[in-house]
Image 1: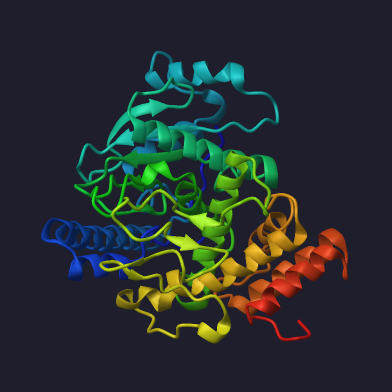
Image 2: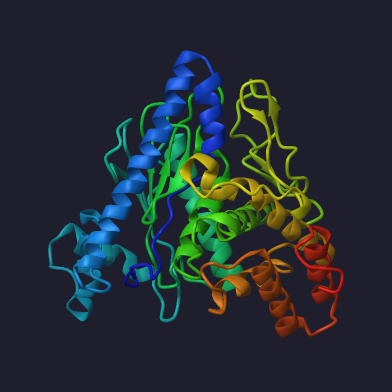
Length: 405
């Protein structure tokens, strides 16, 4: 397996459920669910704080790329094994046996997925108990197997459609923890691994049952290892939108759907039947995904005319990153359907190029990202091509680019 690189940009703690939605439940829901929402918010803050402390310690050590500090012990042990290089693992160890078991599947120049699923068993200690590794049969635990399959589907999209070798493009192992916390109402990427709650059973089901949610959260890792968009304001909204775009592509590829056939919903199936809503978000029609007495109405914006200019603090979703992401989401939907065919063959490569070619600043706004996608369309298809025109029209429709683009 390729050596995992430390991320070149500080990771954001990105949950699929935005803080405003959890705060709504905490304020208006029944007691057990209100407590679960408040607990989820608190754990999210503590995880974010812990990651910031570890990152600061790593920077303060002066050891750039060191496994200490930023990387927790369980990953540091994996890194140390990788760094032995030609010496290989010590004979007779579990690592040596695992490496030997993988060798027949590895071919020169080939990329292979490496997944490990852990069970927190209702606790919050990470990564938890290892319950399924790469190549092992179904565990019989639905959440474990859904996580395993979702990690694989996301890896496959990036490998097949974008020639990317895992999140860091260097063969990074995909690690997930399921059954995290008690009635934990979120799924998130913590900068190092995926974490899935089981939901409260009243508003939210298990977060492993939506493959686009898994693809969304893992894409935050791709952003972390590429453009490193800061998680506030417009760059933060782009962070969220890119995650939705690629999460939706994962779902569409699994279902073998064209852009026209797709429903463009994010998190369909995460809500229970008690919630008046079909999904967490709609990329086709932002602001219409749910309208519930407890959860409130979907606040996503669909054009710059509706842009929510919010304070850049945690209480306001870091400047509305989950709210204003609807603008860029709709642009991708319009571009993908305008180009036609499958999203991962049409608009997807243009968004991927914009994210990964190295020219996008970490504080990029919507205009900068839109122009990066236009540049990608010109490079791939030529100025004035149908693809170039579809992308330009998409960004004009949502008000990011002017009439002349």
